[in-house]
Image 1 (cartoon, rainbow, N blue to C red):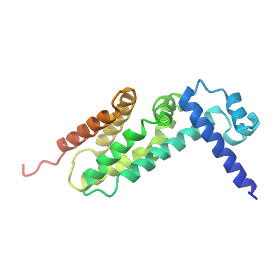
Image 2 (tube, rainbow, N blue to C red):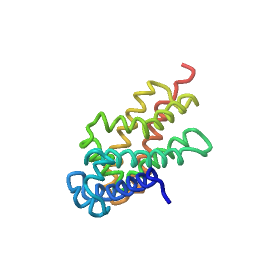
Image 3 (spheres, rainbow, N blue to C red):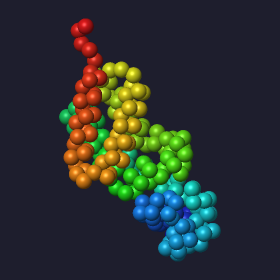
Image 4 (cartoon, rainbow, N blue to C red):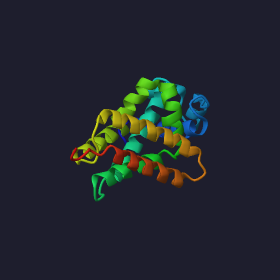
Length: 197
């Protein structure tokens, strides 16, 4: 038999699973908690017990989505022949993961609007941006790029988020991802240290 803690965790995970699908399909504003708890076979009180509010539930959904994207990036950004290959594979993984409705709508559209920029950014800093910062530092350590690393990481983060939003509406996602990764590659070449001047 499951302990109370295990049962609570299963209930919480089921609520997050249902909420993720509903928020991805209808957006934050389009989700009624009554419908969500009915589908989960729970009461509103149970939802409030686990999350405190609709926004608390959405925060949990955002955190799970951020962790999933970060995991995909981390997995993709290793095992290549060079640090640049690892970095570009991580960029590609982010863009591919962003095609999923739960990532695009929950993380890139509703997340900043519902949670507020600062709260959303804090979660992003703990997940995807942490990997991006580490990748930029590895590029600098390997002599691939030079310059203000915080600025480079911020520019890449903003560019990748915008490309993810644009690409989600494109007809040819793969072409858009290929083009974005090529532009990142060319941008990074432009940041190569100047030798022998």
